[in-house]
Amino acid sequence: MRIFTLGTAHRDKHDFVRILIKYGIQVVFDVRAFLGAQEDYFRRNGLQALCVAQGIDYVYLGNEIGGPKDRNYKDWIRTDEYKRNFDIIRKKLEKRVCCILCTERSPERCHRRIISGQLAEQDIEVVHLLDETSVWHPPSRT
Image (cartoon, rainbow, N blue to C red; front, side):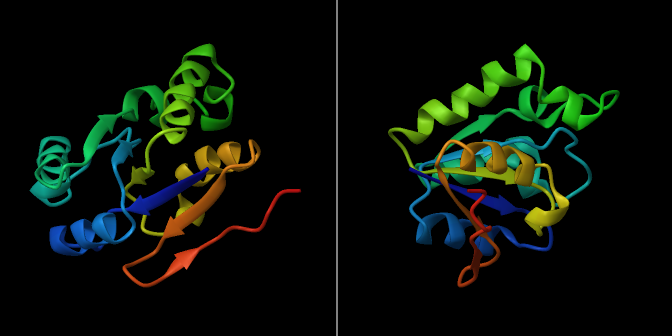
């Protein structure tokens, strides 16, 4: 199994859609806890519309996976609530091509690196989509 990740920062909607299509993404898991002032098309409703127009399922898990503002993220990922919602992603991967989405363009500065790292520990291949032609495969943890 494989999981893709993608950041929305410094992209336009056309670039974003081309990347999703190129890699055959079927489900986008939006894990942005804070939906700040980006372009309208990357706000929750706009992003959902972009995905649906391409036949891609959009699942918002920002509150469930993104973590509350008042907690340390490393503490948050140990909670039962986080684990239940993490399993939603894990189970979808068995049948669909999925992508974890957040704001930061670089996965090294984003909590999606932690989420995808947990998936990698379960022998799931992680591919960070940097742009339409560049990907990053993090080193194996084994």
